[in-house]
Image 1 (cartoon, rainbow over the protein chains, first blue to last red):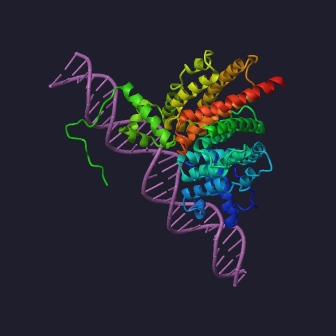
Image 2: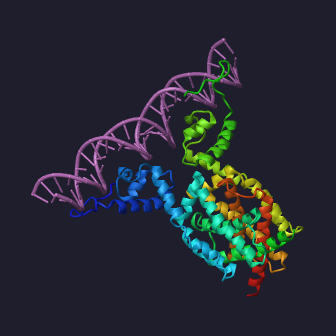
Image 3: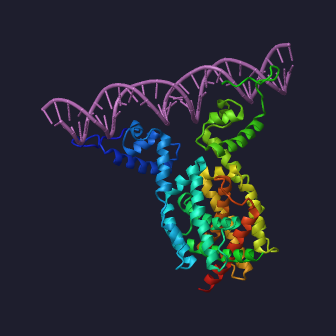
Length: 218
Length: 218
DNA sequence: TTCCTTATTTATCGAATGACAAATTAATTT
DNA sequence: AAATTAATTTGTCATTCGATAAATAAGGAA
């Protein structure tokens, strides 16, 4: 079964794009491609999706691994929004409000099939950008949250203890896993993201208060 | 650099195992191998790990996919313990105790590198045994928990609502994600599994009580 | 020992893979 | 219009892949 030639005779058979435009197009479509097929998939498959021949990729990226590195950067680095961090520290609002806003906008960025699958694939490969990303979440998100919680509860402003960070990870992971169920396993029940997040945050805040006050005494 | 021949002359160069023993060995080592390298890895790599030649695999499994199916069964089906379910319904104990015991023994089974990685790899492949497993968790674990919670709180014994199941998933996912951080990303902070689980359950139980009583009124 | 079954290896096939060199052609410059 | 530059394709190579057929050898039965 051969594909019929649909290109009209007057249309040019090859489109030439500028180097930078082509490069950007390659990266963005590579994100889609590798997210869906995994990083083991062939450069020929990617080229087919791009509508170009496979050797052309090697004019823009020295090797497949170099292309994959650019995919990581585009997903992990470029989509991180620095304004998330001051948002969490805005003491004019109750912490629960800040958390709801943060997780709403944060999940707007990461709750999509591409991001989630790239994250899981790269995690299984053990690339260190993944570990760095988790450190980022810990230092820029979870530890600030725990400090804010202490302040709001009138407790001494000391750095978070390890077991408190773990407790924050439980909430974060619960929300994250909701995204996995929704986008990877396609088995989420409720599609009301804000409601799920609000419930998770409420339970976290209530649990944290008990935990901090109990441990503050002992 | 060639491997020196360490096999003594009097030792037989080929070991012959019984069909069934060989088969079991293949499956168990295939779990280790595919968990570490991913399902895209070659049957030659597996054969090398097994110390046999690659065509021998095809005397025991018709194809690579058939072998992978047996790996799924060995991980997903065979490691599920039916006694988990009555444990959760044992009304002679407070529900929080039951949950702590359950998640302690449940994570004893699934919190190992093999199980976790097989689960994530197969999830990304979209095989339907993965979706069935999540249905199992929902029906045999989460929904019973929600019914038990209602009973313990003296509320009417009705099936769990969707948003309650989502709330239970948040706790379950939080605990699960702790395992991912520990075993896949190797970035867990606390190694005190029981403590992390106890905190997660305490927050869940407190949050659920508020949620059930509030929604019970409205 | 000799024969027979079958577990295991050797050899190989066709397809797919990442990568490279050279030829081609579109767009820009002169 | 001719010449130049560079984007893109054609052609190809050495490996590696899943899979099969045929040859070999280990172990039990006679």
